[in-house]
Length: 110
Image (cartoon, rainbow, N blue to C red):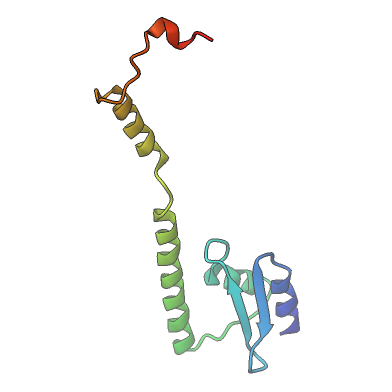
């Protein structure tokens, strides 16, 4: 347990503490930086064995699904720059009452 604790503590942006029971770790992380599946895969590659009971597998599968939905929702909130630029081009070409009536030759004059 101590080895897993020290490995996870070395990761930036990850908070790890010992759980109430001796065989548990409490891990806090930002969903955009880490996933439970990624952390478990990293621990398994270091030789750690996770609880593979049916209940634990179901809990992990639910957590994986919830995290994937959260990550997709965070990505959906990113602004779509291309559509904003297209809107700006249409707005520039659209005839509306908000235009500069200064003659073209005077606009670059300083």
